[in-house]
Amino acid sequence: MTSPQRTLVALDMLSDDINLLNDSQVNSELHFKLLSDFLVQLNQLNDSVQLESEAAMKRLFVGSLFEQAIGRKSMVTVYMKLLNYVLTAWDATLKADAIINDNFDNNADVRLELLQVKAIKAKSQLKTVASAMGKQDYEAFCSLLGLTADKWQWDTLRARF
Image (cartoon, rainbow, N blue to C red; front, side):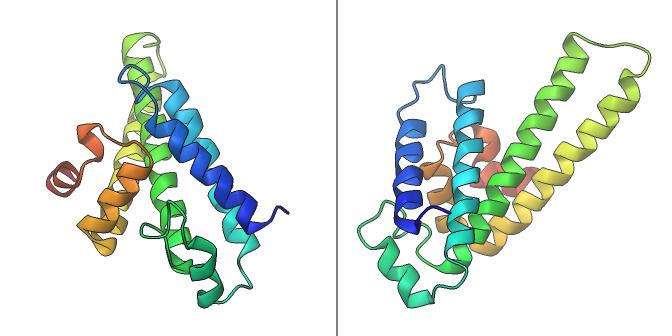
C-alpha cells in the first residue's frame, strides 16, 4: 500500500493532466482513461486512510489542490461514488451509441435497452449524490475532473433526471 501523501500527489498530477486536455481531448477515450486512473487512486487513498482521524485527514490535505474540494474523510467516499457513477453512465452511453451506429443486429434491442437503463440509473444516482452534496461541492468536483460537458453540469443534471 502506498502512503496517503504519495497517492495525493498522484491525484494532483492526474487532475492537472485532466485539466490540461485540449478541447478535442475532453470527453475522449483519454479523458475516460484519466478519470478511471483517478478513481483507482481515490480507492487507494480511501484504503490508506481508513484508520486516520479527521484531524489527520485535514493535515494531509493542507496546501493540496483538494483541500477545499475534498478536505474531509467522508468526501473521499463521496468522490469515489460520484466518479464511479460518471464512468458507468459514460461507458454505458458509449456502448449504446456504438450499438445504434455500428452494430445493430438481432440481439441489439435487448443489449441497447440494458445499456440505456444502466446509463439512466447511473445518472439518477449521480443526481442524488450531487444533490446531497450541494451545488458548490459538485461544481468543485466537476472542475477538478474536467467534466465540462453540459450533461455533467449542475443545472442540466438537476433538470434532466
